[in-house]
Amino acid sequence: MKRKMWIYITLSVIVLVGLYSLITSFTNLQTVPYVDLEKYSGKWYEIASFPQRFQKGCHCTTAEYTPTENGYVIVGNKCNKDSINGKETSIQGKAYITKNSGNAKLKVQFFWPFRGKYWIIDLAEDYSYAVVSHPNKKYLWILSRTPQMEEKVYDAILQKLKVQEFDLEKLQKTIQKTIP
Image 1: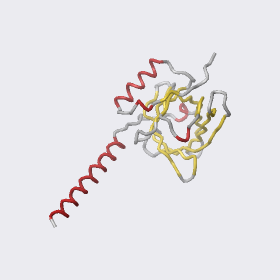
Image 2: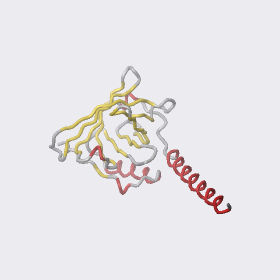
Image 3: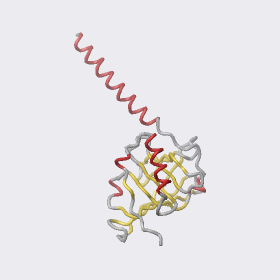
């Protein structure tokens, strides 16, 4: 009887520790306080990201955001497959704003009924760059209004991400065409 009780107690502690870890990993990521969707709209170039299956082989990746009168944002993602001159592929979805988030938390949907969390965790005052993640920190995108980003700006972003305990070993720069 005592042995069964200890097994239940041990399992309960393991479950509670696991839940606590899960909850704290989701709650320690902070978003920016407010995003002006009109200023955020337009074209963004992916500077770096955590590689994802759905972006395999992508070069020259861009995202375009267009707010609608219906309260959601149209999201258009494009990339060239396998090289900078590869065939362009694209996908369009919708992003829904999470209430009371200052427009910094969205849920993006490319395939019904699945929605992914899209949190804006860093944003330049002039909207020249943005950093987007998921509360589990398994997704990360560094975006810029231009195909290249100044190294000092990129390094400053990396320093902020280190403080937030992102695994920057996984971060890969995105190949973009250079502007002459």
